[in-house]
Length: 561
Image (tube, rainbow, N blue to C red):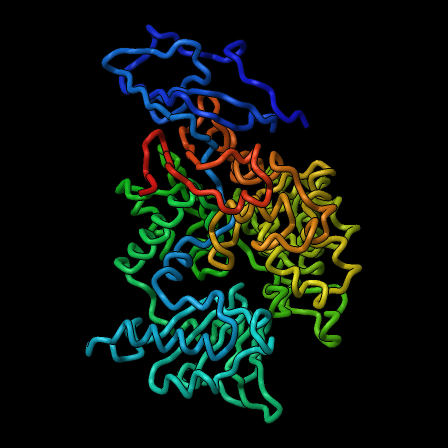
């Protein structure tokens, strides 16, 4: 891959001064980096915007006139807008507004955070019933792997602190919830309740529920939480949008939305209220999935909302031992993980999505879930040969080495999250052993075979900051720059490759590479201004990058104060 080719006016459809039309904005005096559609890094020092799109790059002479606005970039660094190929927008908004358990060092500290939230957010008299969403205490972010005893939490600690209100606290990966006795009683869960298919009600040595529900068992409680109303959804969306724009994220692939959110997003788009681009995946488990599929693709004129894909669910997560493995967990010899969607249901699911002309984005973390998905894609492509392009496996986290070539052969895009590797490196070998790590978080292996990787964060599982992801991709190190030389360093990627995953190839994975992902003539004017030159600083400093400005459709939508 060519690293840098200085862009020139030759061969580029530059706009002449007399051809300039009204409302032209020229961003001048910048140190710009982008990719071209071949994935090569290009540089520029100015560019022009007309009608929400890039109309010229590297003008030799800056235009002038009443219809031209010149913005002096003051030598600052400009990049294309960041595209996060896997996040949960309203989940992030909810996380920002509710109990945050990220970074807790013990079960006791997590309980204290719940108590502090209760003290800071007293209920009104009208919200004291469990039919009211305010009565429920909802939180997310705990990770027992980072706690002092590394043990899963139980209802006992919550019961001692919260006696009358149901508490539901999601593990950081969203594949387990920790609940109190009030929540269990509301759900009718007791010693005699069987675990559902694809889930587990964890029980103690006496057969009593511990308060931990894994994967599909979560739904026994979460289905009781009153559905957010439109005002609450709007509050979540605004909180998430503020946060994402401050991080330079201009577009998000929202990984699994309900019909309620589908209707909400469409209404927001019709009212021109969307502030971050959304490429939404319909949730395959929504009862009204057929209705949404029959409505066809959604793509607004300003490309702020696109809906043409479905998120399906193969297995759970590695941290909660829910990822489906071919052989048992190395640290739990009787456990192969969970198939959230039973294998026998895959042909019907794939036929429904592919037959409707939608992209299928299949969640698969364990090697068994990845293998089953690849096998079913191969079979379904023979049935639907006109819909074989750009389907995705979300996470592709632990893949049998012999299965990796199938991604390239079938044209399946691995949609991966770099910070998952640096978050999981403290437990991944315990879970799957050294041998299976050969096919785990294998970014460079995928790239070498010619696969295009769509990078994302999976926020709020991880923090939404894409510069954390760029740092993790390039260094394979934690935020403390550990371990030396990185974890499984042979799978590091170059900065150009990492940037491509968060821009051009993320756009490609959403069928949007003709309009998004690079700063090129004819594409949407989505770009960011940052406080440092990523290509000249030590890789260890990438993580600390600050976003100074964020622009979408040629308008500044965020500026650091």
